[in-house]
Image (cartoon, rainbow over all chains, first blue to last red; front, top):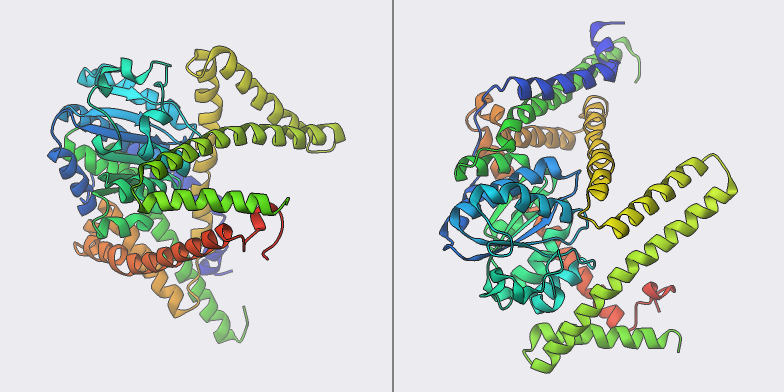
Length: 279
Length: 207
């Protein structure tokens, strides 16, 4: 068996070990690779910068554990930026897992910006119904949520003093690994012209590029790379930037595997055809 | 009547919500808002229906005592255990959070992380350039992957620009075509449902 043939038949478990090494080593010893800045991340940052203190941000935290590595650092970076800007944050979620993440956001990171629950930030309870729930947020927000997550009526929470309906929202941000951003675009962005920024897992990023390019949404944050870019722009160091070297080496390993396996396959195929064999 | 009433009900409610999007009549808006709230309540009931259905299926499997019985038993114990803890102590309680942090969250993240190993296997064994189209796909994939991370800029300074062009022009053109096509399809199906021509959702076929 030739060297190339051995490569074609390589035990894939060797590659798995290489993958683990490629992901772990940069996390322990960061390499400091350059971070390409995407236009759609810059646009998102600049839109948040343009908001006046006290503006309402509807932050839809539809994060689940599987999407956490990609969306959670972006949500933290944006929440920190909102606090720096003095924006009033209303947390909602339309997937059940989002409740835990929304709560973590204001409880763990709120104190950094001296954000007081009920005055600067509030969490709404989970409502089932996906697109209908989002449509209801637009049609009658106070009808959909009679109380906050902890049972306090909205009129007893100072954050809602200037909030009448969805038209008072200056920015909607959605963090998801599902189809929900599309529902928000359809039901709140298109219908009520609520400025929208979408944070989505990298694999779904290209699906939402249409909406950014057409100018319908203000920004698109795709994957953990966008989180790292946002951390850099907003000067809020966090988890995303530290993951970028690992992501880069992981990508390099995948590309190397695709190219090398194809070269080995082509060489062995050519040798077989010269010998008159078939594969 | 069994078929006609749901079709009529669906058509009337569908048209009311549809018209409310186009006309600013206060009565229409308030009826539409009310219907949307009903839908949220119905969705909450659907969760209960889901629990009942999954319980029925797995209780049957446990009673059959076949090789899958332990899995079904585990599902029922975990589902009702979490439900009882959530209802009894509240979703913010340390007991419920313990399950969330140490069982659900860890398992969900682990399950998703394993896909990296499947991707590695398929990158090595599955992606063979057997045609010109596959070659174009491979080159585009590599350029886009490189453009998303810092390593691309080190390989060649133009990689990020080319990668962005692929995502913004050919990809967006294709996605836009798919999106417009699927939206037109959705409009067509919605109209068929509202006009009673499509009855698949009632358990039967089209007219």
